Amino acid sequence: MARKGNQFATPADMIGQWMNMNMLWIETMSVMSMRMLGMAGMWSVTPSENKRMVAEKPLAFMGSIAAAQRAALAGKRPDQIVDVAVTRLRRKTRSNSRRLAKRGMTRRPAPRR
Image (tube, rainbow, N blue to C red; front, side):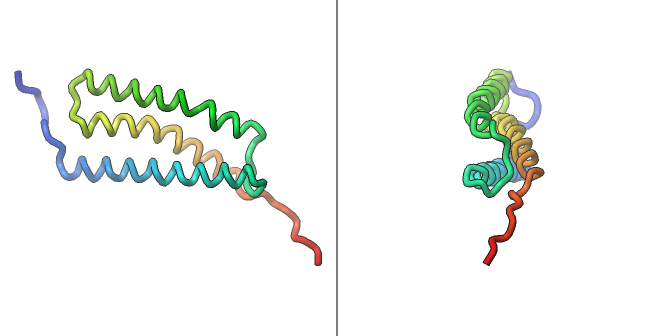
């Protein structure tokens, strides 16, 4: 039985997926940088940020895997399955990036000479 719709990814589909993956990478790197700066006392973070950083990962990955499995069971193309998984992960990285960016650098007085 033939599937309805396009069975192959178009170049536009592939470019969109590439952009989505790149945004995931950029947001992940920015969140990691802000958290590392927070550990060094140079970025304003909440005291619970380290616990949050560890606790959120299993839930984010389980949600991503579950969404990818649902897409695969629905008969989606491989590129669509990956896109669903990446989109689910981006929800968390995007919210973390925005939340941490709002807090900003730690304000410290200039050293006296």
